[in-house]
Length: 49
Image 1 (spheres, rainbow, N blue to C red):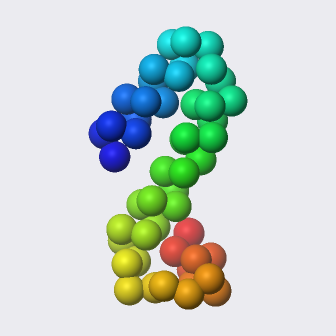
Image 2 (image 1 turned 180 degrees about the vertical axis):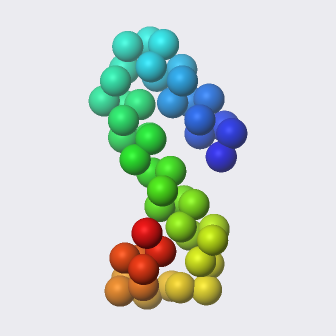
Image 3 (image 1 turned 120 degrees about the horizontal axis):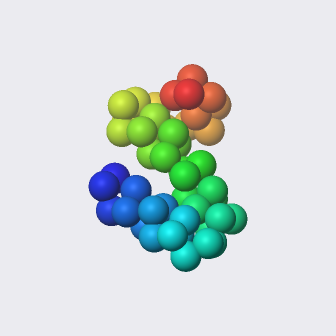
């Protein structure tokens, strides 16, 4: 996760705002997957948020 955050910061520093936004929007999904790794189905993804 720290590496992903560093990559977001690099993108922001380079002025690549769309890339930074795209990467930043993956963070909640990653955290939800880690916290609720037992939920595998597509229907469970909304519960992770």
